[in-house]
Length: 463
Image (tube, rainbow, N blue to C red; front, side, top):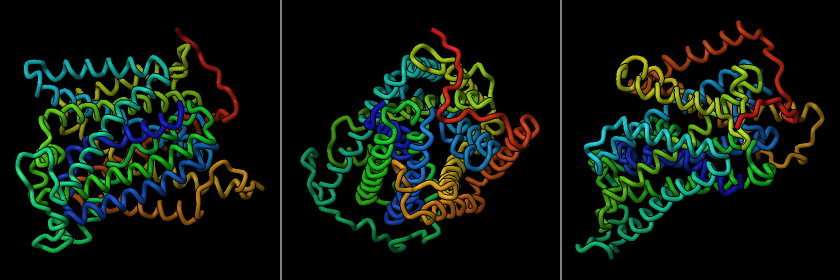
């Protein structure tokens, strides 16, 4: 894959229902200015994590490599726990993306059951992933491009409407400028606490940017393309998320922002875009399938990488002639569908546990990345390495990884004070401890012999 594929894979993993459907709720919780500040903070944390990821991804360009960073720098048990956290995070996402897509399809096909669409979309994403990494990358590029075009349209047309220009609307609108930002309760109606609580959800909304690291092993010239992709991803996320939230906050009254199924629909109808609801229904379905596409790719590579290291059944290393880990792909999709079933028949028990662990994993994996960079650089320098020889190195070391770890830890602690998100701690922390306990009992403290990065692991090949 090329740099353009990596950028769109990262964007595709990030831009989903959180922006298109839930952004109004964020504005209502923190206020217009508070929501913008929360997204700025989220974008800053993403930058911290991504520059740490860049150094690691170039040094360890292996497929499904997020847990490899932790294993090489902090021990195999930490890598094992990171891998299963991340895998479970995306498996749960698969079930929810399929379900949401099926529900949205009923707008046009009300007589077709949701489960039928779930199976159709599962088959489509499996086929796209099973052909080749190049096909996956190209598909994800176009999936993500549709979302980006919708966001740019919102920014341009909504930005014009803020100043009173609505050429598509039959009704004239006055310029609102930033009047919505001054609410009856002040510029920060929920205070700084509202900004901080909202930032927790924003961190989760930005999760997926780290997919650049997962795809590192299937990237041409990683030393050049990975840093380019990381820089482009952070810049585009900053522009797309912050500007779109600013436009929505400026045009929609903040106390009614969450009452809409999608604030994007409200803005498009405000500026006079015809068939706004149908257009956004298509865009959101595309967004959900794009996230599911990236999630299935990530799950398969993570299982393959675990098996390659000796920490999962060897069957997961089986590759097709085009280099696709087909068994890992099938198992990941199958467990994703099990997650979907549990959301229907065990929503208050099994599914609640899965969703809670997935939410915890989003931040925990980022913590693992920045900690791995900190220890990698320290080990590299102590071993006589010259930082200048690294194709890409994290700037302002050690401030960047330490600051990122502190901010992410603070967000984990703050979860305990939010009743809606507290289950993430109740189930997430025990799950991590269970991973460590299982690893030490099954493999011992030192674990199985890791496969060196520059060593080709033996794999079985299937047609």
